[in-house]
Structure formats: structure tokens, C-alpha cells
Image 1 (cartoon, rainbow, N blue to C red):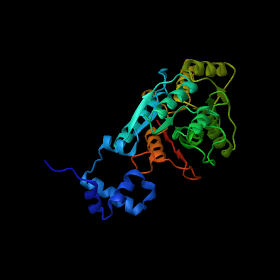
Image 2: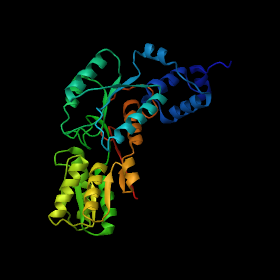
Image 3: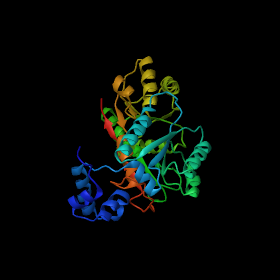
Image 4: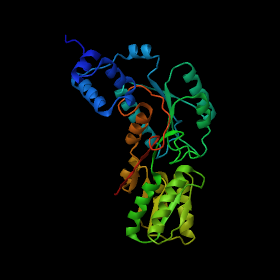
Length: 334
């Protein structure tokens, strides 16, 4: 049976010291990019794998990242978060990290759960999902000095220009801007079906529609509904009864897009409806939608936590230009 490659083997193949190999594996940001790439190539060529339990014992790390498993609520758009959790688990495993999934029914309960996991050294960091405006979890985790990255902006003082917190998000405004530009090919009257004002994510997506409409020198009607097919159907049906007319509708989610389509069909009306999330429902029903690319979000989250090639969580001071990753979504036209 062939002997497993060692750190010394990697060092000799890359022409560096054992300490340099150790730095690449544990603190990659301190190694020059060219040297780091050479070591990583040697690791790939030799098929070197670290011994997980020994590493955790030596570094006094759990090699584990915590993430909340949101309560199952059904619906259409929840598949995006499912894809993200699946992707981040796969990518973390490839780096020798494990994911610990926990449940919590509120922000307070989530903070308590994370504190317990952090105090008992069961996790090295956390990933927050479902961020809201002035997210209450953020200052609490800051106080505990628990490393975290959020999928979604905190939607408070922390924004594109503020590097206090690490986050990865999808450019919602960019997605609806692209959707609106596409919809304007059908006519200048493009409506927007969004959530009630006050949601950071919803307001951002509405902004993209507004910017595209203004750039085109036209105005449009804004309709509102909660994240529910029946609510969206009712809102569009009522607007049609009140004389609403448009050439196309851009929606804040696939859920609302389905409701809009049901209302239009019931009224015997036809017009393009564009959703957001590109769920299997959008594919099955054949309407265009904005793809969020949650797999790219997973890559961004792990890069912020561990560096581009690292396999341990490396605490870092957020700096402007390196603390945030904004994923450009893709409009899938059907």
C-alpha cells in the first residue's frame, strides 16, 4: 500500500519550507500569492490530505461552521436557501470543514443557541441568513466577538461602503433592473409587484425597477402584496377591476409572479410576467425569472471566512473593498 504524502513531501515538491506549507494550510493570507499557488498545486498533484481530528486537536479548533435551519414554511421561493445550504456544505467539506445545522424560532433564540455553541467551542464561526433591516443579531454577535458572515446585507448602518461586517448578497436591484429592461421591449408600461415597503431586500429590488424606468424616461404602476400566492393574485385582480393596465409586470419574487399569472389568466388577459429566484416553478410554468446563483454566494461566504484557499477560519479585520461580495444575478428568459 502506497504511503500517504506528508507535509514534507509537499514542501519538497513546491520548493518551500514545511512552515510555508503550514502557513498556506492555516493562514493563507500571510503567504504571497505565487508561493501559495505553487504549494496548492503540489498538494493537488500529490493528493495530500490533512488528518482532520489531529488538526482540530493541534489548532484547538472545531473546524465547524454553524448555520440556522429555517423552519419549513412551504411556498415557492424557499428553494433558494435550500440550494445555498447544500452548496455551502459541499464547499466547506472540500476545505476540510464541517457544517453544524441548528434550529431557532426567533432572533433571540438563535443568538442564545450560537452563544452556547461558541462558548463550548463547537463552532469556529457562523453564517447568518434571512437578514432584516437593523438586524438584532448583528450587535449581539459583535459583542461576543463571534466571527460571522451573513448571506444578505444587515440593512442598517452597514452598507456597501461600510466594512464593519462581512456579508455576501445578491444584487437585487441589478436583477430587477435587467428584468425591467427586458420587459420594456414589450411596451413602456411596466408595472412592479413588490412587497410592502420596509424590507431591505424588497426595497432594493424595487429600486432596480425604478432606475430602469427612469432611464427609459417612463413611469409605471407599483402594486403590493405579501409573500403569498393568494395575496398576489388578489392584489392584481383588484387592480384589474380598478382599470389597471400594463404591457408587462416585474415581480419581487416567483411567488408573487405566480399570483399575478393566476389573476391575469382568470381575467382573460395576457402579458409577460417576470419573477425573481428562478425556482423550479418558474421553469415548470415557463415564465422568465432572475437567477440568484446561491452556489456563488456559498463560495463568497467561505472566501470571506477562510480566504480564497484556506481550510480554517481566519479572524480578520474587515477593510473597505474586501469585506463584501455582491453577486450579479442572471435573468433567465423563457
